[in-house]
Length: 188
Image (cartoon, rainbow, N blue to C red; front, top):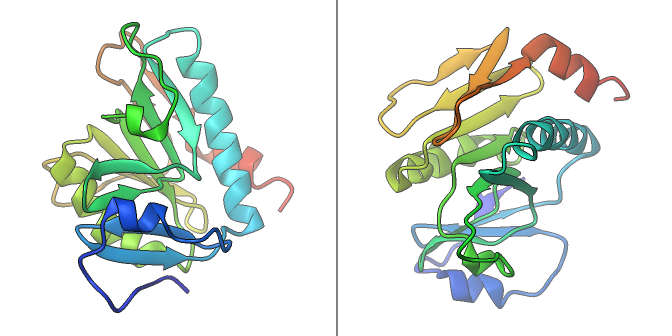
């Protein structure tokens, strides 16, 4: 189960120095979060959503989707590894390192028992404070998406349709939620 470490005042640099032991290490506002590797079912959902986002983004050329592990530094005391994230593609800078990503268009976490509290509370509030335009929490048990925006006090619950219009886009990505979960969970 994921839990914070006892010490506080962790930094992104301290987290990067930790050994690769199969755990996922993140730090949010100086609090170290440690979670085990994701489960098989979780990865099926992440993979299907990555495919759908890639199919939408690739021909439009304004953003790129990636999946963790990744070290996204929001500030020196916050290093996160969203399950999936979209960052803008600019012609002026090539992305060669995680540190080259300085802003996100979308952050996504797929819930698991070990991460649910952090995803819904700690990380959600941090993403909102950062001004990330959208944060999705994917609940594969309930087969729904929670959509959060920076000023939201409650999520928008999406169980039928999800439409995403990122900054700079003229056409929304549309996702039939029941069909998505049917495809993502077909083999598990």
